[in-house]
Image 1: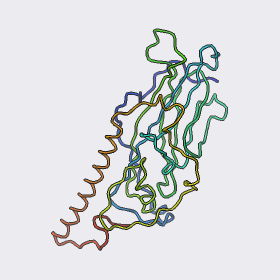
Image 2: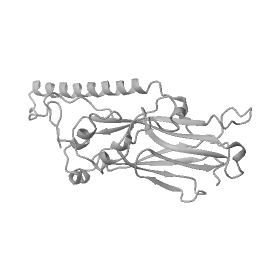
Image 3: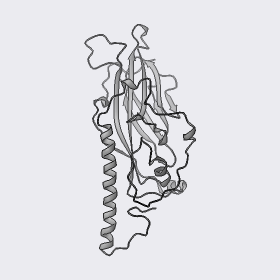
Image 4: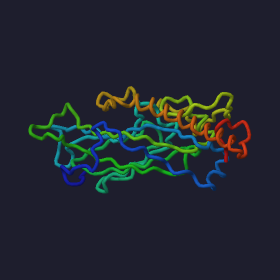
Length: 273
């Protein structure tokens, strides 16, 4: 199997561990909101930290002209938690020279492995559960097979790893979505006001019956990059959500002080549509 020209430089080196901009999902249309029949929590955001990556091993003596490397492309939680609570399926679009280049992975871990000789850009499309978002998210990741330092022979023991960190942000989440993920370790949610009641969490697509989907004990986990700031970023994101909720509450209070109509209880800083 072939790929693009060997040694092609990726557009975005994700392995540096730097923090890219947050990816904010646009709000759902009114028609989809009505179809979902779940109230929206205004002025709130849910954040899902993810990592897209590739790990490539040189095959050494087993290598051939068309298959010099075995590689794996994946989407994992930033702290290796199960992303199946948010992501329904992932579609990986490989180079057209591969057989069946459009690969669909319906459950976590969201990954696939292949063999080849060339580097190319992989299109990765995320589809979310119906109560999360009706829009898909398109990402791109460059498959890298050869190390930056090519002065010596390539080893079969140490793979070439490229990972990129992203935070997917869902504004105005539905009640059902919030209820399902509020205690999930892969998701960052704001703190709700005291006495605020949510509906009981509902199971989506037999999530509870699935096999474990985290990547903590993954065979390749020893090669996953350690985003040293990942845990701190999760804490910062949670703090940012709390500040945002406090700002909304202050705005409501100022509106009342200015003589504007007061929002009906029990919103306590949040309104529904």
